[in-house]
Length: 185
Ligand SMILES: Cc1cc2nc3c(=O)[nH]c(=O)nc-3n(C[C@H](O)[C@H](O)[C@H](O)COP(=O)(O)O)c2cc1C
Image 1 (tube, rainbow, N blue to C red):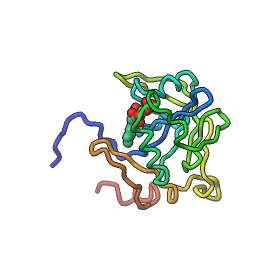
Image 2: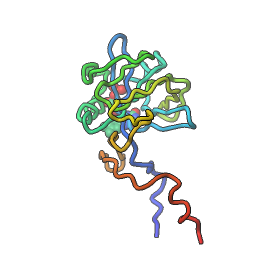
Image 3: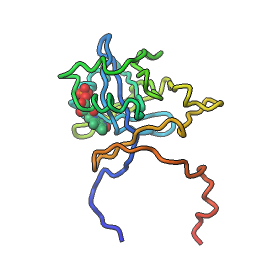
């Protein structure tokens, strides 16, 4: 038996990221778990409108999305605890400027450089719809044919209801390898 618990944001767990944007010649960082994929060539970053980073993203029309693994979780958690409006967060991560001018966290295993092409507004939120200009991956997490190896790259996951971080688990099989046993008899 299932119980209907109403309208809930229940699509968890999802990967947690640090979004970066330039503030003049310094970066600023914000922890963002509500990111998504649209179609096959767009990603979405959903930010509360009052956040410090929003105006910089709107000014530059550029942002970076840095995947968080356990190595950078303490710093990532910190940039989710305080606003750039109160605290200068520019020194929290060592970074390199990507080809598109966004700050790429040196210790993050994978970073997307993005251009903002649209903003979808909902009450109190701005969701930035972005194209992907570049994808920077630590070579240790690349396979020989330059695919990202998610068996080694382990993003930290997040879930809102209990406000906890989780780990990714084991590989359970290739996609479409179960279909022959799945057809309803
Ligand atoms: C685990 C976690 C996930 C978060 N995810 C989001 C998110 O998806 N969207 C958002 O707007 N804020 C999110 N936040 C809150 C911001 O990271 C936080 O308010 C931050 O201090 C805002 O920084 P800024 O004002 O410098 O931009 C999250 C915080 C935590 C701890």
